[in-house]
Length: 287
View 1: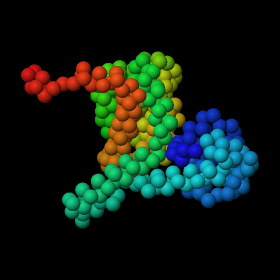
View 2 (view 1 turned 30 degrees about the horizontal axis):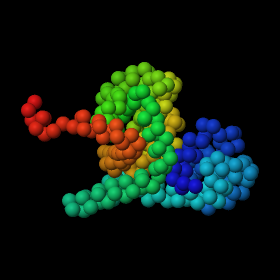
View 3 (view 1 turned 45 degrees about the vertical axis):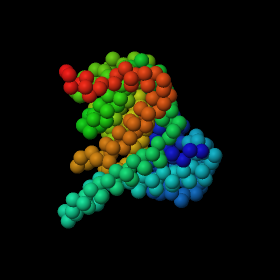
View 4 (view 1 turned 180 degrees about the horizontal axis):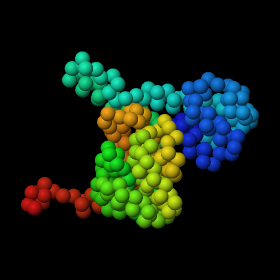
């Protein structure tokens, strides 16, 4: 059993859960700290279900039973709590520039490592499968997440994968409305609450396109609810931020992992693309 992504699995399962299991999902999402250490009977009583339903729910999460679910849940909750908080929470007016450099760098490193731990390799592989089979990949993001989307767009252009991205949100919405079942939407939003991105994801799904969300990995957000696959990043900053720092870097890390896996899967063709699209410094200076 892979211990990564259990919180995302719980949130995503709510879409298909039966009535009794939905009570368990809602309780876990709403009271994660209370779930830690709860016996199977305690959780059953708190959710007005039975121990048998709790066991069945645990198995639907990919665990052999409730004991394994508890172990995976506690592991991931500890990882998320270690990285949660504002990127500038531990920076004070008394800090020197050297202190700020050290603290920001430490935050970035911790957030990157946490993102690696919560990413599920099978989930990444499934997303790359969709990227390879998609007729067109439409990218979505605004604010700092738009910068992440632009980075992925440039990478995909290097390997001649057809993709669309526009700075203007209205144009992004038009792309979503024109999507077909053979297309793929990759939506970037750290908070998972940006209404424009939720709308684009919802419209893309309504058109039959598959949706990948790159968002916080510790919450069942509106964006996650619209996605077929969620690639979670560390909860390194609060949803309301003074400026994207570690969150942007973690999203870029996920993009790099997606792209590297994509290239690795289609190595020969991508290498040929790199050779064809290489722009030498001499060539650039002549223009």
